[in-house]
Image (cartoon, rainbow, N blue to C red; front, side):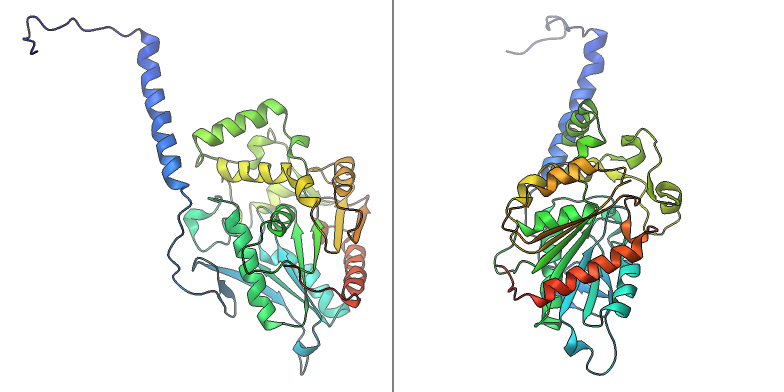
Amino acid sequence: MLYTFADSPPKRCLCPGARLLIPVIMMIMAVLVSSCSTQLDVNSPVKNHPKLEENQYTSFDGDHLGYQKWVPEGEGASAKIQTVIIGVHGISGYAGDYENLGKHLLKSSPDTALYAAETRGQGMDPERQRRGDIRRPKDWYRDLYTFTRLIRQLHPKAKIVWFGESMGSMIVLNAYNHTPTGESKPDAMVLSSPIVDVNDQLPPWKYTLARVAAALFPKLRISLETLSDGQKATVTEDDIHEEQAAKNEWYIKRYTLRLLLTLGNMSGSLDEQAATVDCPLLLLHGGKDIFTSEASVENFYTHFPETTDKTKKFYLGSYHLLMYDHDRDKIFDDISKWLLKVTSENTTPKK
């Protein structure tokens, strides 16, 4: 039936509240559609096969990520390498965070090499638009396994030790339980300053709000200081993290909500992830670490199986960034002694 202008139905009036609500609903629907379209698990075409170059490597999806290395030099030095550490840095960090440990090992452990790769979505990611974001955590795991495989090819007889610091410890432990087909687990692991309970820092209402916001606006970016109510993070004895980090070229001012939610989910699952570890483990923690309490780390440690060769080292006067804190020489000596013990044991790569 056709209406003429004269007999058309009267227009319905919207109350002021409804007028405001409709654009909000439309915006949320648009964001939801957008977020669904951007998070589809579609395999990107591989541009290049994984390979290791002098200062970068090609990962599983053809993307290039940089790395740094501390490898003994000299005639026959490479053949003598018995242990290779693969470092995974923390949030707002970069591969060079392992420099102090790398230099120490070159002096104290000539049979040990250290390689540390840049983490996808962090400040030295060549894909600038990806800095501060991660689409899915399994990309971190696949990067780590790809890099590990390439390093194994250089040192086929050496034992592989994953060394994760802070956020890196979450990536390492979760990756251990998400092994892609055909890849090998590490021979041992070091977890330094793991953030084992995000609820230690966030009240339940704020964490719930963050989860809801991340579901609606996954690419919205906020600073870490926003979550901590602007509190300054003291991470070494003489350092304020925000003031120092802002001077670095790899510093990221804001992270997407989906990256922060991903870290929250990973942190919340660490007890479950720990229960399956069956390789030698070294856990390092500073007594003045503001991100995780000693009690939480102690509880986390109990979730590793009794049958696992596990060791914990607590440094009561140290803060979060142990490799840069005042007690680092003692910490490095403890790491060296533990590595010697691991190397002397007959451990084969885990499948």
